[in-house]
Amino acid sequence: MFSENIEPPNNVEPPNNIELPNNVEPPNDDVFYVKDELKLILKYFKNCNAMSSVVPDVDEQINKIREQGKEFHTCLQKSITQSNKFENHANNALDYLEILNDPNFDENHVSDILQILIDNAENNKNETREIKEKYESIRNKLQEIYTENFERRNCDRRELQSLIERRNRLEDNFKGQKPYTIGFFIIGFISFALLLGLDFDRSESSILLKNTLGLGIVTMGILTASSYLYTKKLKNNFQKSEREVNKLQRLVDLRNEISELREINNNLTPIIMQMCTFSNYWDLQHNILEDLNNNLENITNITTNNQAIKRIIVKPMKPRWENAKEKCDNYIRTVRKTITDVNNA
Image (tube, rainbow, N blue to C red; front, top):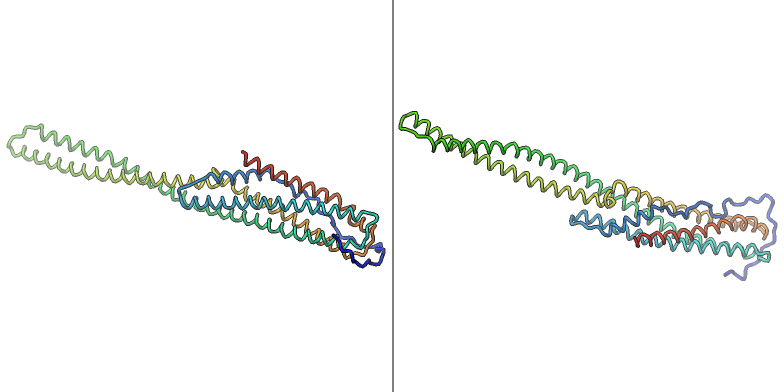
């Protein structure tokens, strides 16, 4: 594990005023805490897999959400793997600290040990950054889907309101025209009955009355027919408008289902915000590793002896690494249990 051909340094006592690096141990922040919202996210993506739509653009949005669900699951599995690596890193750090704490420890190996920790920290830091960036990418794409769906739904709602107003006008016109058609028919029918029922002589007045009734019947017939055709047209337009309203209403309802399978406005936004929580989690872990990297490099530049190594490194770092190891294990178990609970629900 260590180089066997290292030239031993001169045993120089560190000066009394040596400036020790700050925070040589991992921060004590509880960055491994997993919030309950993880279950909400997993349930949301699970329910999206059961959704379907015959409307092309709605189906397209559902597929986009499903794709992000797959990315989220992949990223979550990577986070488990990476946390496991971080736990192993903590184990290695504790093992190396035990070596440093050994009274028979040869100070010549300190640079080897620290370099191993630095290299491991650097690898973990890069992997952490990739996971964080992927979570941010998922969050941004979900935000794009939400914004697109929100804008389309608002546009559909405005169009729906316009169609409803047009339908209502057609309905009022249809209901208003119908009495005229009935009235014209009744007047024409009465005129026709009078024409058939009255006994007309050959006087000039009788002929005039007969012609007047005949003209009235013809006029009422024309008016009745025209009114009937106009009423029928209004009815057809009203029914067509009613179908358009119902069709668009179904589309608006489908968009509502996309938006968190019943209410996107209330639930998708917290899910996107929860992505920020995961991004912050990895960002904090990234900072932990970066600080460790920088601080260990500082330690390698200190001329020290065995007692100084213990004072600078072993005493403050050991409990922190034990804590980090425990938190990594808790994170892994919590995430796996949450995934299992959602899958079995």
